[in-house]
Amino acid sequence: MARRSPQEKKALSYAKDRRNDYGENDKSSRKNIRRNKRVPNRADRHREHQVLAAATGPVAFEAAEQTESTLTAKKSMWLTKRWRKWRDAPLADTVVYQLQRRARLGMDDPADVDARIERVRRTARKNR
Image (tube, rainbow, N blue to C red):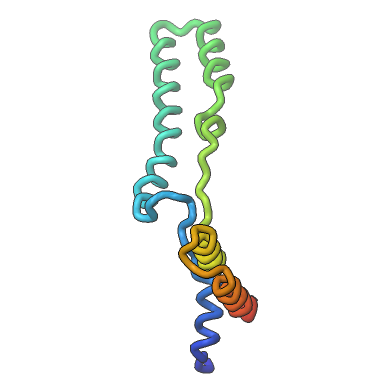
């Protein structure tokens, strides 16, 4: 494997590194992803338990059919809540956004920002 120059390493970093741009604290994702996957399953189990608890006692064919149809008629929370994981953004996109925001808020000179954005994009393009 050949050694990479610092410029090649930077281009690889811009292309392959990812940053959380969802708007939350990136550390909270460790808990929230698990929670959002867990809650719909728990709600489904709770609903099924309630429906099946109502069907206890002597077996009646009509009651069993109604219970089964009730269980299949209600959509799973997985389908109704529609929570999905969201991928992180490439580092180059995040850096460009931050630079544009600084220019928009007057923190940096827009001409300097444009030059830096072009440099970031040119560096990121090298490795695509």
